[in-house]
Image 1 (cartoon, rainbow, N blue to C red):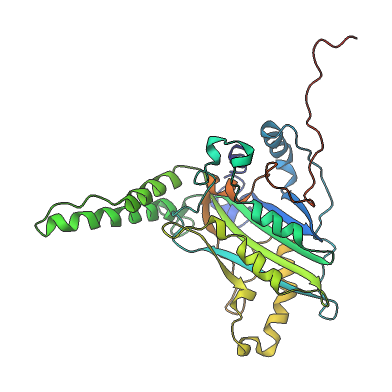
Image 2 (image 1 turned 90 degrees about the vertical axis):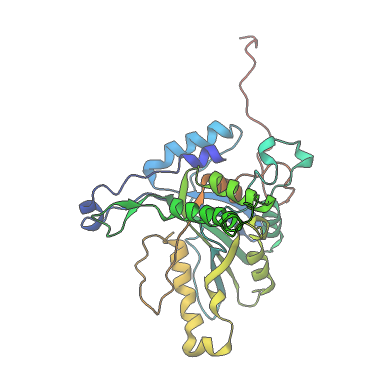
Length: 341
């Protein structure tokens, strides 16, 4: 999947600073979505029409047995009516600075292509949970991405900088500096511990791959009489398997995760957020949202490289046994060349 997602690294589209600021041109962005509609699990990719052929070709090149269909937007029928249904939504952020990588498929040994029965696929628990919900419940996970680029300090003029690679260098320098302290105090330079060596290696590997600006959000919609708060824990828990204590991980940030105390819901603030959260999801709006100001939640992108992205969004193998996750019943292949005509 890493090869497929590499094709999503489309840095063009903005043109010059005049095109960007005056004409409103934007960098291409995409939405990778894993959805459960009443327990039926589906994978969707939202893209601009001009990128469709390229994306399909990339997927078929790596997954020749897969079937791709252009479908009506599943989110179009979703609506909010306080007397009929209820909505919960959350966004996610990283627990440490962006250059620290999350646990990827490499850490799970999937880069070595083990036998199917020995695979530990971190996406499987999420699919099992999504497949367990019942009719009347809808849980949607949205991963919005665009190519990460260096930026100018004042947007138009000045030297370009990249806070992602600069932060990685800063974190490595801090570890190396700690090793020098003992020598400066008259002792011997300390040898880096296994954990410190692993962190340095992880930072170097992280910044060596294509980076993406990312935003992850989840939304849970259900009829008012069926809404189950226990499902919220399942949604928040789907990111746990990507976290590690010494590197990076995900945490909930924004939307309804900000409401911890009763007085935070005065004046119906939570209810007012429900239709706006749904609107943001349906329009796949994240990088260029018009909502600004102190009274609005402003989404803040973070950086994941293509390896991390391929870990949290990929098509699972046969190890995922969720009955509501449909598969193509047979493999596609060319006919034998020696068939009689």
